[in-house]
Length: 168
Image 1: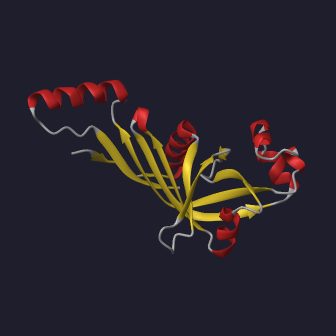
Image 2 (image 1 turned 90 degrees about the vertical axis):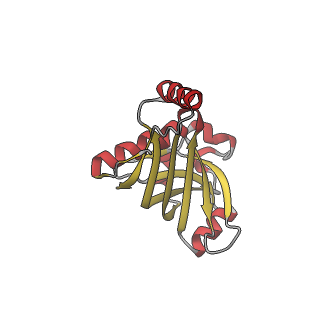
């Protein structure tokens, strides 16, 4: 069985930042009170020193509409190649001010916002985590793969994982 290691404060933010930035793209879920809830892939612009996650979004998107109705969101990250996973439940906030847009802007975003930082449809989303859970490997990908192969050969169950709650 895998190990449990709950992290808090700076250690939790560092783990959240490492896992979210390694994957960059998450499934961003809204309208959680209805099934099926709404989900779409979104690219993280930044994870700040407090553990907030920042995204660029269209003002007229269904996502922004749903956040205005209910700010509760779920973010799901999966870095399958390195066996790293992250689930974030929190509140989303919408920003339209020029200072925040300037701070979070990326030149790659011009593919979605053709007028750049001045695009009238551009907003910034901040997700403030309330509950975060992670799954990771203890020894890295190569060691884990060797252990899994050995366990399969000898017929034993092997769990090289570590998981826990991140209190940011």
